[in-house]
Length: 249
Length: 235
Image (cartoon, rainbow over all chains, first blue to last red; front, side, top):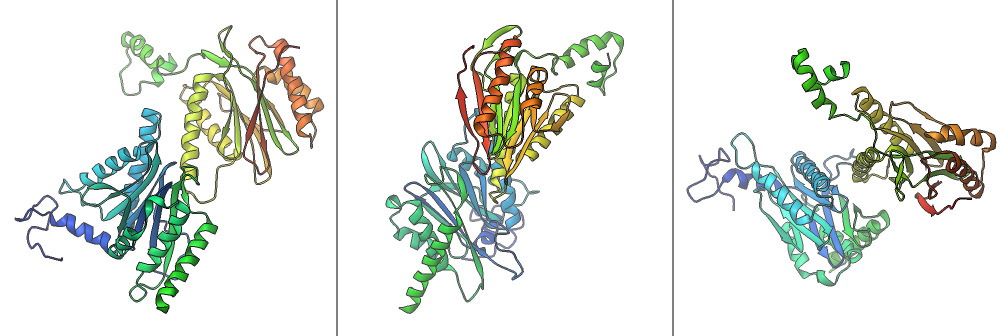
């Protein structure tokens, strides 16, 4: 998959002879090397989960949040370069408050995804800007129900019922496809996401990780919030148990 | 003349252009209020805070709007009551909604309490006054956070203080004397409501811009703010 685009990869404003923009592909590699981020759309809401790789034992749990609230009804989980991700989140927050102040209603998730994608794409058009080295999974609950979008560093955004980015995305996507999401509530979804993330975590290559999860669902009153501690602990326990079962086989 | 020049720092103000420029600058700032609310009265009681205000919006001497909510909850812990220009109060509510939203989005278990909101409002009011473009309101801010009761007030020139009982407008002259006599620590909820009702009745008698429909909000220790709406007929 890796090809060196010698000479055509120095600037984001250069196409290669076979029609690729290498700088954007390199930006996507930054996302591919980060901890897994998973999002699923359940019957009654969205669940987002992040495998937060802990680089230092001295880090306090709960710090370096990777999932951010964008507005009351939507949240964003970030993969890739954390600082780039923060910029994207800041822009999304600003778009959301601006929409609300102009139109008087919370920004529809589709509109928000389009604006974020448009902003990310903007940074691939000029030679003096570099593309964002981070991809984002955006989940929200508006009048049309729960919706899940993914925005890549190239600026494309698609709507999904299940999405994963980062190191373990292939394995995660396989797991998500096995789930019957249209019949699942977010309560169950939280446990499934935990299982997936614990499952794709590579014990050999990366030592410790912290699981960060959030949801927007009927149970949370359609507000984006961190998954409550008791439910989170329940999910972690179930995930660890499932892992041990698999190891025992 | 001074007010006109303040707005035009970079332009040369010759006497001929001054009057033209001045009228433009004037339309950018509040000169006088149009739709106003009258007094707000607030007291601390044993379990929290009680606020009362009538639901009238006067247009000069006409009692034009009779269902104006001048008391609103702010975030999880506070209540705000406003007298003065209603449109400025609506703008203040927009600022507060933005403030509370950004606070909530941290999702870290912390939230702004009444003391913080009061301080924020004081800064806003005072800074607007310094630009000669005030928000034409007198605000009462009360609430309970972590068991601590707080009741304060701030007005359009930025004067602010906290006390066990506060009032705006005519309430200062008619309600506060009553409260000074009859308020004590550990008022029960019922005693507090009766006391406030007494104040509002006196205000209805004597304040020409009072209407006979009340709004009362209470804020409890440890519980989100709630409200009860009362219809009070003339006695």
